[in-house]
Length: 108
Image 1: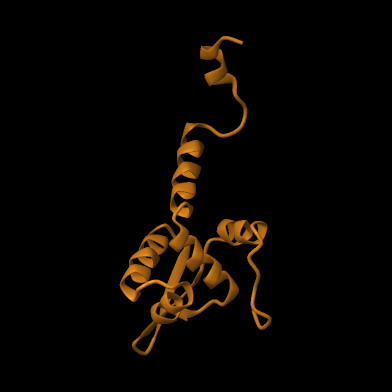
Image 2 (image 1 turned 30 degrees about the vertical axis):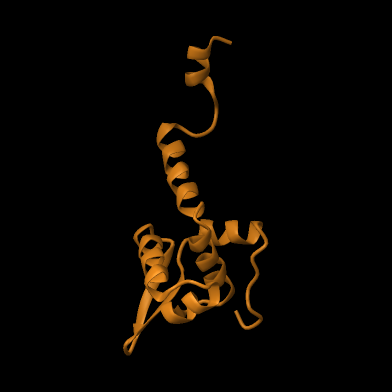
């Protein structure tokens, strides 16, 4: 097959789909963000302080990572008094976390 033809004949994702998934995988490539996602998958509705302690990050670093995840729609935040709690919001990411072996807490 001519390489030029291969670019137009490869089945599957179109160029926009490839870019979409590349951005998603780039976001997942950071170990701290992945740790936060696994932690939220296991136990939803956690504060930044609790998440930071659970994954061994500073609260500032965890807050920055959560801001990126929230911007992408992967997590949501809700305020209870003065405390902001986070939870997973993206079903595809939820399923991906299952696929890599992440578990839920018994009460989840």
